[in-house]
Image 1 (cartoon, rainbow, N blue to C red):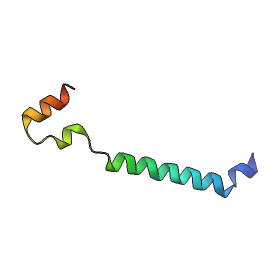
Image 2: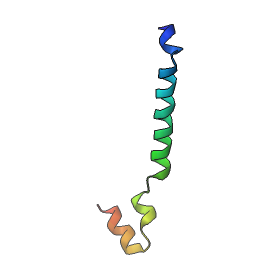
Image 3: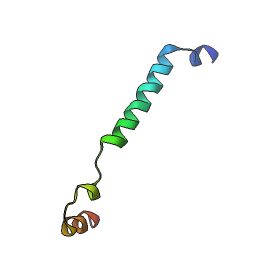
Length: 47
């Protein structure tokens, strides 16, 4: 188990997973933020 925790592959995988999760949260727009008028916001909320 200790050799797995010291493995470079494990840390690269975990780092890539963390970077991907951060990028997904950061770059993924929400429906409410894109709505520019109150009518569009209401339509997005009822979907």
